[in-house]
Image (cartoon, rainbow over all chains, first blue to last red):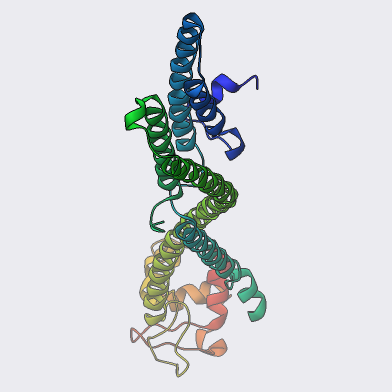
Length: 119
Length: 207
């Protein structure tokens, strides 16, 4: 986790992996709702809990924002899978055609061989 | 779920939904008792949030798959770029070769034209149907022979006697044997001029 700040930095645009994306929103939501619904007899404890709670709400907000910026850095998701596979196929066809073209050039009758056949 | 959306847009939209649902749940929890949602509604919101969480995880798995495909595509792209470079170099070499061949062909045609021109004047070989007396023959011609050194020999004083014709010159150089005695080829291109094969040999030796 030493590169956590690098992973969550919204100004960093280097690609991330899915494993780097933090999407654990549910525990924070659970904690916030639990602390809201808790009954306090002591007013100071209630005030402290309320402060804690608003802190957690801010934290949740931040987590959503970080998750968004992290998702924007994931590679290969600018298209849906179907379109991506189409492009993959197009690339493969391109490569095949270019290979064939080079092979055609390579197998072209060279002067040397035509001279040999004359002699 | 609209399948035309990109996976990125789907992920962002799920996160927007989750944010909205979570905020709604928190606001509802804070609200005074009278405005609170029923337990069923609350449970529905919770289920919705959970469902969105599951959808998010599934879509992230899809994103992982697509990242792998992207990696393969990057490799393919690199290979395509490589082949592009090869094709570019090959085309440049072919273009160079074409240029060289075009120049050579042009020069060869010029040379061939000159060769035909030279051959047409019978300067190199006599025509196959050549007969004695035919002026079409290789160099040197009579005219050129006369203009050459042998022709000018006529002007030199020799033992006080100046040979006026090549016939006389022949007599001097061959020791008085008449030209007609060893005459094998006689060319009558200028009427009085007689040249023997022996004389041609002598003339060539002198040159």
